[in-house]
Image 1 (cartoon, rainbow, N blue to C red):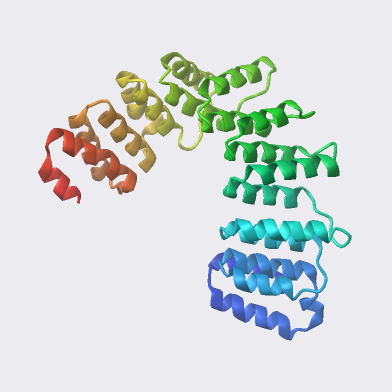
Image 2 (cartoon, rainbow, N blue to C red):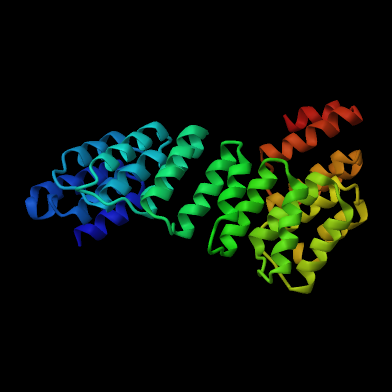
Length: 330
């Protein structure tokens, strides 16, 4: 019951209730205070609430620590944007190896911290450690390694890890394709997607999203059309798909196709991202009046504009000399 309370109250987001709950835990005695599962839940609770100092205090006052406890604290630091502390704690866990066994969760967590720091040298050290500790590394760790090298602007190492994998799942392929797009290697990303198709690896909505981004960056009409055709043929739909398609067609200066997506049946209930994509697409292609028309329709549909909307519509005011409209938006 107490554990359920800890897990429940951290979702509410009330630190005061969390404090009361933890005091109750302490009063109940050592049976609870020394229960590592309960202690780990308390650390997660405080970390979720942004109280990293309290989570750290609980961790440091725990005499016995298991893998889950170390992982909870490391993840807590990452979640609250303390990557240096997460790395330091990982190194402490490695030094205490007789008492704790690091696992894939530990390794993936410290790779996330390394990605935030964009520290290539430490990423290479972690890679060496992974090879030394486990020759047949788990796919999840290798996927994280690919992403980390990419974030460190060393996509060549990402490819080495990818090519050396004995097993590859769709997440592995998507991680590598995404790494190439993030490093502006869009043509290489497209070639890798073609390789996926040759090997009969079923692409999913994540692959499609990355592919649309690559097509947008390249302003390649044929690739865009082929990707859209693939979506229609396989009846693939996912959240945000319309805005990706509109953005892709707009960047390729394919106004008719862009407008067709926006006006199609499956965008009847348009979300904020779809309206924003259409406004931005019109602005990018110099269709100033159409930007204002779409913006007015957006307001009439009671869709609230956000910072992205305003960033898209303000250039239209400047280009059209519509100072009055600009002041109204301000």
